[in-house]
Length: 340
Image (cartoon, rainbow, N blue to C red):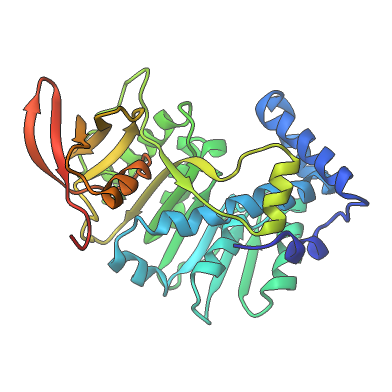
């Protein structure tokens, strides 16, 4: 978590008032959601780059910590010793998130970004907040292979497309890969192309797939595999989201993780869709051993604490269950709760 107050002194553009900042955020949002042809224009505008940092950088940073909770413990331990390649780093959103998560005093970060104002903004933030961390920047990949490296695509693979992503990975040959992308239906087919390329080139999928088989949602016109996370922000960032009238607490994502090494999977069952709760049950679509199945959890005889936990389940959550019985095309299951 990072506060708005920490970032404001390090923006390329100093807003004259809170109202000017809110207006700039609204302009950005309009470009992102309604006038996508204008998206690239903000990259050269210091005011809009700074507005992006104030609103989107601050609210995207908690994503990484939330995502890492899903990952194998052995993998996370190895990542602590890795250099980070932040691919399409923008103003350094996920570089900052990485430095907050990874406390290694010898941390090294490589930012690859083709927008010079974004690199300038990232450098200014980094020099102000993390002067002790070794930072390298470039408009393209041109660094020699050194120690183990994690290549992170944070909201960049969806803009690059699968062909450029895979050619970049082939050139850099990172040891580990993490994708944290917007949870949009339009990007999912591209992510599946990247996934298949990685499996064909000896990478192992760590998340979200239970197995390295063909995705059961491939070719679907209605379903796509994505996750939701619930995050919190510092009070001044939360106030900014309220003033901008944008909910940034419940966030949809497409998250994938890969490695050249093998690690134990965290689960064989992962929720991919949560249906509206009924009076008698909870129902989910679950990816179970790379098959998509409907699960039903009956409420009867469950303790209040268990019911509360089940109401908090979001798409992406790992679950452990025991089969109660098959009911038509539904698996009626009992959830095995930790420490019970």
